[in-house]
Length: 275
Image (cartoon, rainbow, N blue to C red; front, side, top):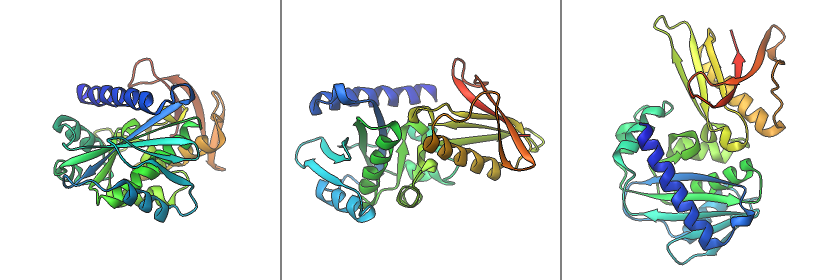
């Protein structure tokens, strides 16, 4: 599993380096975000069709197509550069199995993901904030997804894949599409009465990921708390400070701790003490 994840990260980084050289934005690039749009056939939508879908879904967005020809297609949104590239092969089987296993929001992810035939890489870079770049990337990926009648979209920094209609709904309706940008993993003890939560993806947005240990809160409520707080820190900045408390209701105050991850050695997280 780790080898598969590392392999896609190496491939992403190599491709990103090539894209940066081609579009000449090394000095301006602060962050990068990466998605794979999984297509059911070897046919890829034209750049003009993708552009039309982005404009249809986001009519107030200023988006333009910079180079409709060539292997790498570049879009620009608010100064962010989003490059797409069609790969006429499926993503690796080991990787597809692993991301499907992680993607609990999509019940039959493994069966559906392995059926895709080709995929489109979507990589966004730019001078804006990490969240602005991520959002721009997600919107171009939505255009590819809709135009190509995709099966699903893999969001690299969150390490999960989302069914196409769910992806389009989230990116199209949520100002802070946390369900795409941040994945939430919940496990429970053998008795089923205590749960542990971790998030994946907040680091790529410039914030620490969350952890919750041994909570009695029901799983769906715990997940919603994580997504709500993720949107809160993206909107407000690093406001969950060590030693403070946060409350969801007058009788529910949770202590905040900045600590090393229980599950990922060397990684600093925000631990929420939710009983």
